[in-house]
Amino acid sequence: MAKMAEVPEEVQEKVRQLQMLEQALQQLLMQKQAFQLQLMESESALKELQGSEEAYKIIGNVMVLTKKEELVKELQEKKETVELRISSLEKQEAKTMEKASS
View (cartoon, helix red, strand yellow):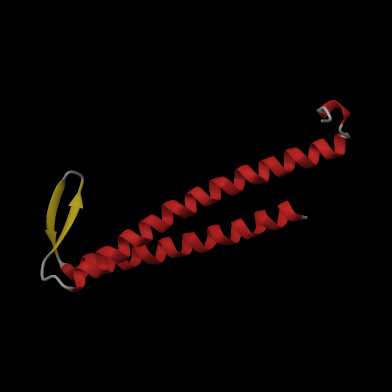
């Protein structure tokens, strides 16, 4: 097995770049997973609200009765925002993968 000192500087630099890209990709994937979880929670809450007459919202440690229409609107806006963030992360992920393969 060759030691790093024996490996040309150009190859060492390429390895460092690939390691940095790998770390960036891992961070993107972790962020994407977190947003996907938020998206699933929003979709689940919207589905539950369809079959209910009353709506409650948690503010801090307190659950408060709120207007169903307002909560639905808020959840839909949150869902749209999260979908945009996921889309943005997917684009960043594709660019990072492209850099790593070049």
